[in-house]
Amino acid sequence: MTFRRDAFLIALLALFVNVVYFIASNGDYTFPDSTTYLAPAENLIHGHGFTDDQGCPDTLRTPVYPLVLIPFLASGATIATVVFLQHLLNVALAVAIYWYTRRRLGSRFVAITAAILFALDTPSVHYANKVLTETLFAAGLFVLFVLLAERRGSTGTAILSGVLVLLRPVAIVFFIVAAAFQPRRRLPLFLTLSIALPLGWAIRNRIETGVFTVSSIAGINMLQHRAAGALAMIDAGDFKDDLAERQEELLGDANDVLAERYHVEDAMDLDPAIRGAYYSKVGMRIALQHPIGLGLLTGRGLLVNLFDSDWEAMEIVSPLDASLIRFAIEGWTHAFIVLAIIGVIVLGHRDKRFAILIAATVLYFVLMSAGGESEARFRVPVVPQLAIAAAFGIDAIRRAATAPCP
Image (cartoon, rainbow, N blue to C red; front, side):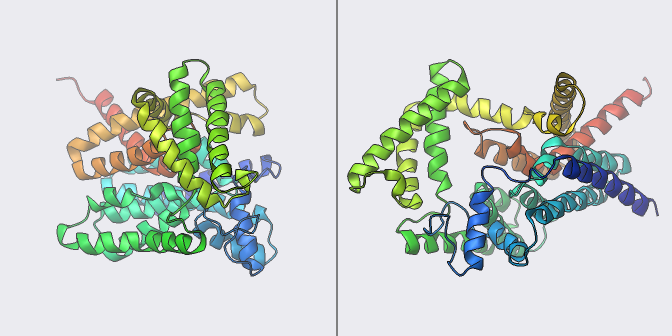
């Protein structure tokens, strides 16, 4: 009875927060990236295959999210419907966090606190309000996380691992982390199945474009966010200004080489897969030539991914003074991350394997996107894991404060 009541109240809180944000956002449901998911979905509906807005085989985006969008677009539903369902997925995820945390750790206080921390997380609510992969990926990753923690069957776990790569390519080598939590006898099957879907998609891209890649976005990120970011860190001026200058410089140089090599007037007319492959090669070379800058960039990116509050997302929908909103949300975010670190450390003395899984999952995803593009958005997939750790940290502090003096 207590469980049902808690779950109902948590769902009510999460629903209130998400619906209020949905209504207050005034229909701002798209982001610059949203069209790159909508275009292949629309083209599939009209029989043009998985192609981009230029009609080229799309290698920038992987197929899962566009396929999820198809039933809504084909039925004439607005993108607001998609966004509202993503908010409902946030509600379900808050309840799932409560359910699993209480089952795993046996503490009602920790379970309720973890669910509340997730329900009130600004980036999680904000990006559920966009036609983007963050919310669906966070839910899928949490399911995978639970399967790994509970040592459930390797087949389903491996297939889900592959599906997540085709939902959000940043998960491309997460199977290595997941493999560390598989029984040794199941490891060959797990590794084979986990790479099967990404490998199949890479082969599709090779057939369509001549480039063997899961996603061309990796090459763009390598040039524009790793190489340019490493150089911007060395420049030691205003990072955003230096980054923009370096991005323009490196992109211009790379496109000049491509235009000459392929005998075209504008390299941007080339297939994105071809450009991405070259960007990756050049970007990797430049980044490795500047290890100090790359190291500084990675450290900066890690801190930004963890501590960026995305307070502006609440400023847009709130009548309160901007400085007050910024102070409150940034303070909340910093406390949240510090409590999560404390929680992982303390949890390690009670459930070492679970604590390592939380730490490994969080570190993998925040490090993979620790470059010039770093922002709170890239923390969203691991907020459930951070919420569980932070809740355990709060409980540890509470118990220490109320413990009788010796």
